[in-house]
Image 1 (cartoon, one colour):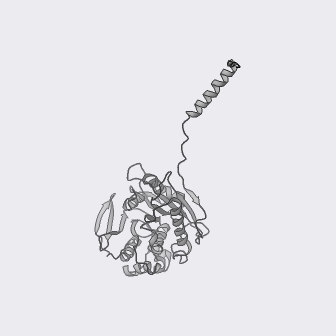
Image 2: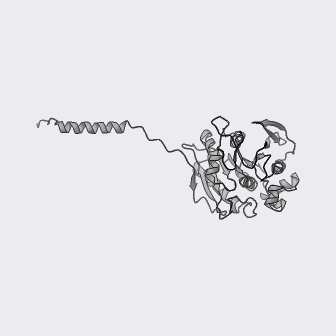
Image 3: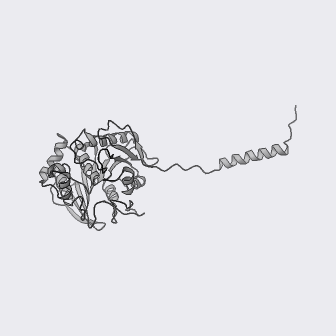
Length: 329
């Protein structure tokens, strides 16, 4: 039997070096998973409105979670609105995904969603159809809960929120309009600018008829509505919040007398209930606020958002209160 050769000093040293290297590898800290980020999605449908789709999906999000569609305002973009408004922050906190449609300058020079164009505000057409296709793609990709899809937006995004609620009511449980416009307001007023700066003269029945005409034969349920509006907003006049309330209480079979009037975060808040007692419309009147998305930056449980252009620190985060109303928390 051949005797085993004793290790030489060189071979011993090499063995020690190899063992040391192995130990270093074994005990290195595991690399951290990269944090979720806003990412673009392509090929989400025929996209007749020529929009872009972005989304935010928290790391490790399980199946069966809600989906929020958040629509930016004019001059904004998907990622900036998603983070500035607080929606991506709340998605991490509460566990849901966010669809962030983005307008293209070729469609609108100011990057406004075309809530006032007949070709973009009808079911099966233009931007409304593109956003509906984004919802379908998101639900499929993340195995989301189709019974808990919500839509919200600021300004032109708020106008497009009303469009989606009217044209695709079966897709959305609720909507949140921030400094936005009623469905069909531009047509009722004669132009989008009259709608924005003056408002349109319509009865509650006439407002409701515009929504019902957008989805002929639909018997419900219709999405519930929450509205946030600054009292010092000179871009979208506060009368539009009143008209939104008239429109959607009528659609829901409720009257236009508030069943609850109180304050939330110091601001006037009203709730309108249908004959069965369900809250179907609520409004927040943000005293002294101009045109923008209310936020409340900070680490408190009711705080979210980051102040910026048309994203205003008023010590109230609209996204939080919408999520609270929608039981996302």
